[in-house]
Structures are given as structure tokens and as C-alpha cells.
Image (cartoon, rainbow, N blue to C red; front, side):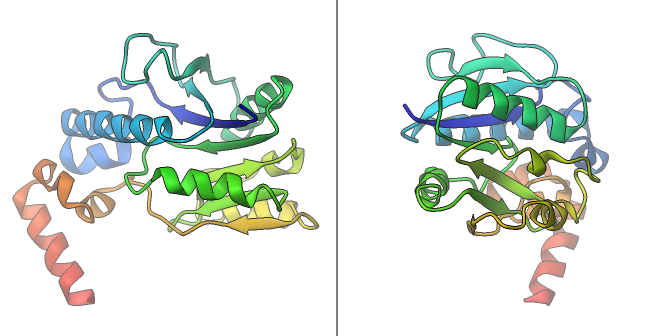
Length: 214
């Protein structure tokens, strides 16, 4: 395989994942949701014609939701998010892959066609991004290592994609459809599949607000 999909994932431990979401629905429900997101991400990536690697936040696990037969398993490097992603891309290109895409594990809207489209865009572009509604990105892909993509900036903020693009001027860049990561209870409410985790009082308020905006 010349194509590689890298996914960054947190180890699913109580109190250590989806912490913003947990403020509204509690640690236990947040953990259950994250496990569902992992399962969705793993299933989606398994449908893509590419090699696959998962990079864990804390420790490498086996016999878990990331199928040992489908995913190469590694540990994220130390440092800020940019340094972690940089190390993962450097590893992938050192292994000989010619097109690499990285995604997170909290996008319920992620589909196999998103990744197929990303690799297709990399046939004629230097890089590809999947913009997120919060100003970041849910996917970044490249055809060779571009160090400027990882320059230090305010990671996990609404300016990440904008500042990254400013650092990459001169490259040909394609964009996928804009999507929404699940970080807050408002994001969660957009997906009926997860309504069972939201207290009725909060859900009624959120759904009524959504209808009013429509």
C-alpha cells in the first residue's frame, strides 16, 4: 500500500476522554460515547484501501476496539499536538508511504468516502484538509513531509486551520466537506444516535433552540 491513514486516539479511560462533554453529561456517559466514536472510526477506516495505524495517547493496547490485524499500533510522541503529528507523519514517510492522511477519533460524520476523496485529491495536490466547524480540521493529508504544517501555534483553537494555511502558502491545497467534531453536548445533540446519553432537560432545551434557529 502506498497510502496510509493515521488516527490519533486517546486511551478510553474514565475521566480522561471527552472532558468538555463530561462537564454536561458526566464522565461515565462521556466514556461510553467515546467508545462508540472509536468503534465508528475504526470501522470507517477499515473500509478504506490503505494501510492503517493508530497512535495512542497513553499506552499501546491490544485486543481492543482497534483490530490488531488491521491497525499498526504506536504511541504518540511527547510535546504539543503539532509535534505529535509531525512525528507520526515523519514515521509514515520513513516507512515509504507516498500519501498520508491523519484523522482524529471523535468525528461521527467521518465516512470512508471522505478518506477516499482525500487520497484522490492528493493525486493532484500537495496537501488536503477536512475543515471542522470549530476552526480546526478533522483531516490533514500530504504527499511529502511539509514541516511548516506543524509550526507551533494555539492548537485546538478556532484559528488553527487559518494559521496553518498561512504557514503553507505556495502549496496546492484541496479541501473536503466541512464537518463537526463531537466536543460538546451541543455537538452531541446533532446526532439522534446519541440522544440517549443527554439528560432530558438539556436535550429539550437544545432541540428547541435548534428548531428556533431553523
